[in-house]
Length: 213
Ligand code: IMP
Image (cartoon, rainbow, N blue to C red; front, side):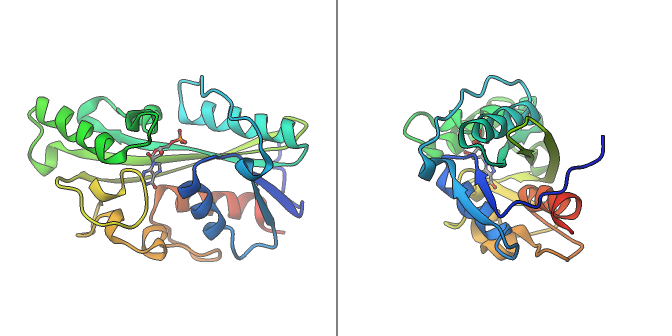
């Protein structure tokens, strides 16, 4: 089926995560689209019952599009650590517990890696994954994945970004995502050919596919 271009003036961001909504606003800042967040609209948060990032992104985007009657964009993302068979993966947010304690979530990753004897950098490979789903109220969905490879470091470094950023050293860099400004972390502006973060890579695909006239 042909890709559906996005031509509407408004887009609902189907997330209640303030860090994500902020990044999505930054990444879409140069497009003439007004962004409404699911939190601001008081939309319910659907249960993430999928077994993949793509399934969860799709179910969040479709729920928000249905509830609001407007197109909605959802991001399902997380950190997949190779030595932990991809964990925390789709459970990245849950590892932080109900109080969203990411210091604890990062410590859990470190403890699991140590339990596997993964202390050398080459045993600590990981990737951040982001899958975007853009859904319309008629249930049409477009999916855009993005990934960035790197290494889990300890102790955490940096206070920028959110979630697991302070323990993720992207390949080819000597600073963690937590030590980078938003501009450096994403490494992309519409029209540019390179993108760094998993989210920027997925947005680049979205912009090139659906947002260009
Ligand atoms: P969900 O997609 O809302 O289920 O949660 C994704 C979780 O993955 C977030 O709460 C973060 O913990 C983590 N995550 C996703 N993207 C990033 C990122 O860019 N930096 C740090 N952590 C991230």
